[in-house]
View 1 (cartoon, rainbow, N blue to C red):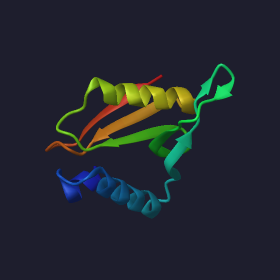
View 2 (cartoon, helix red, strand yellow):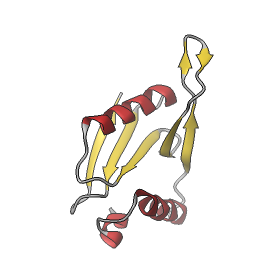
View 3 (cartoon, rainbow, N blue to C red):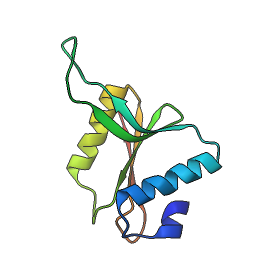
View 4 (tube, rainbow, N blue to C red):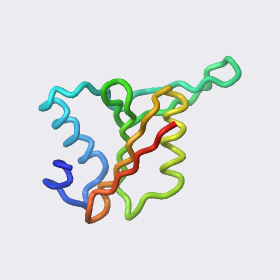
Length: 107
């Protein structure tokens, strides 16, 4: 919320990610940015990977969007990240609206 309060809506996703990373460092919150996940299909690793915006506390996927609204594809993306990461919780956060919008997605 601090990032949205300071920046408001209208920036590109990368700006919000940079600001979030600053806040994580400042708050000593453990995180990984652009964490790579491989996709295992029938025992083989597929050549393309998923990259989650952030993994916080090594167990929460944090996916950042900057859109006029969230859609089903955004939720599906988070569900896929949960499957490949084996995390149980994803937070989908949209900085593109006047008020900060977020969804909690549990697998």
